[in-house]
Length: 158
Image 1 (spheres, rainbow, N blue to C red):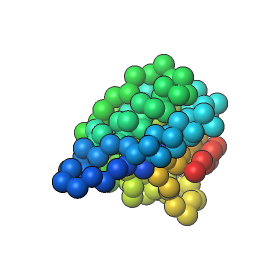
Image 2 (image 1 turned 60 degrees about the horizontal axis):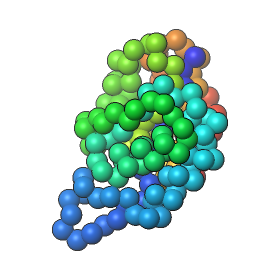
Image 3 (image 1 turned 180 degrees about the horizontal axis):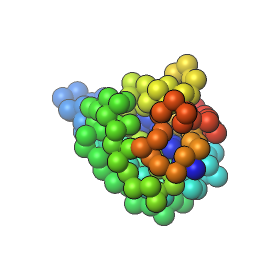
Image 4 (image 1 turned 90 degrees about the vertical axis):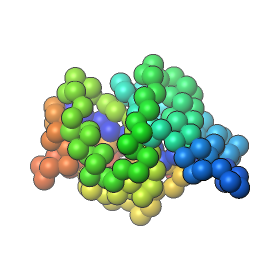
């Protein structure tokens, strides 16, 4: 059994002249990330690895969620996730070690939305600071997304 948790980064500030990559979370975004982590801590408790896009707002979201939910896994920065497409992230997931049972990814839209949809989750949108949790009946990350390995949605939080 594999579990995958996708979180879209929370709301960021938009200061003039600051590159998109360096935008920090707004105070509302910080509050949203902490609120999500408290509400979904029981689901996120299984996360054995936490990966986030290297942008400031996604790293801040991931760190706040991990800390607030009491996760022991260290947040790992993945620069490629900043501009990645859903299929690139799916390929990357397929290469993860099979001894990992549950993975948390914090990224951007439209990628998080498209990834969830490509894995069989029916959602109408993916709000900032939202999360979808999925379970797959497989022992191998490389199997997720195949025709016989579609996700079972276990949680959707906005």
